[in-house]
Length: 198
Image (cartoon, rainbow, N blue to C red; front, side, top):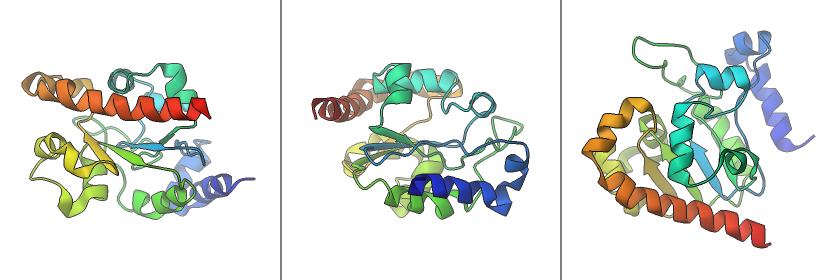
């Protein structure tokens, strides 16, 4: 059993996750010693939890378009790790899903990231991930944080959430897909190519 497997068992045994473990729901994340990139989003949606496949929804389709990679590479490569801010579907709110539980990422992310020493870039998808990892380094709002992405590289790359609900935001801010997405693709493709060349 690997250290990551041990951490997974600890997560499932944690009282805060008892309702999920009792229903046979496992924490949804992916970690690898070979990972060079970590994608940190909000929390799995209902479909992701049911299928045990992170980003298995229209948001994931758009995210893969931005990354410039196929579903096969997205799920199979060991270069990309996936660590949402909560590893369980939190439930439905009046608008969208309930936010990730407070304290979850604080407790489990450091342990898992310690087991991925080759991580070079952490992709921060949405407000929750950016607030947690950038803290006071963020700009006054998400738009400004994403627009000033260069100041966070190479360690972090902030993105807007790829949810269909953000279609209007993307139309109002064409610079995102014109400027930020190509940088994102260059980072991802370079790491995948380097990994394949070894």
